Image 1: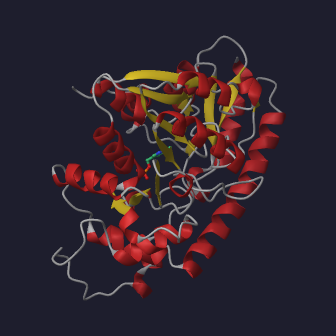
Image 2 (image 1 turned 180 degrees about the vertical axis):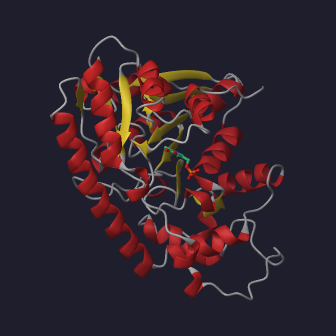
Length: 372
Ligand SMILES: Cc1ncc(COP(=O)(O)O)c(C=O)c1O
């Protein structure tokens, strides 16, 4: 079935040429430049693809397992993909058939809903509530999962709220999925940016039908490399994904793989995460302080990741608000909560480094809020 556009992507398409002077809610750490990798790049690297693995460079697959704390798995359990987005796509398209029951979260990353609808799946949405700090209600998940449930799709950390599922939560979710033999895809694209405790374990290590998806896009700011991964104990799932991809983009881009492997080398990874975390915490504190001083805004501070949802007091729906903020004189971009079925919220965040002009954006946001 045809894939239909989601409101989130529609808003991004509508606003790509807006040239804002500030961005609030940037969802990536500050990106490195190509020059940062030149010292470790081999200029004689052939740009063909002969003699390469369909699953991705073995050294990169090793590094992916190491950063996820999954070194007890083997590189055969990993597929390198064009971002976490491709990993999610390959997993969902190969596992879900028309009429299958799938369970997703809301608010959450819309990809599973969009693909599930196009496949003709029967979709149950588990509502995360602001009053519960956006935590996933495990009882509701348990009630929703039936013997017909084929797959559960969750994000950890959650996009857009920054809520985090602990090791204890994940163990319970595994029990729920295992009860009916459901596949459990956990999109861990924001992992590595936890603010109140350790990084929770990756689902691929906890459950034989667990599928971890992730990438270098968020914590490392490497979105433009289009290099991510899928990890699963079941090698048949990895092979199914290889087969589907053979019929779209066939293979990974070699530059993306080579640079990602350099970026995940332990000394580089540790330094990049330390910097990304320090920048994010400083900006989160500024944002938290800003929201506390704004009578028309409130939020649940994210437990992890670079973004969160702030509630807008008053009657104006979030999309009208976001479009007014983007227009002159404010010229400031943010994503409205309507992109996540949350019309009373706006998405705020702290990534992007100096280029996003966070302080300018906050002053423009304050100015618009003052007019309401
Ligand atoms: C939860 C989530 N999953 C996947 C993606 C896509 O990421 P990637 O650049 O790794 O494809 C995003 C990007 O915003 C995301 O927030």
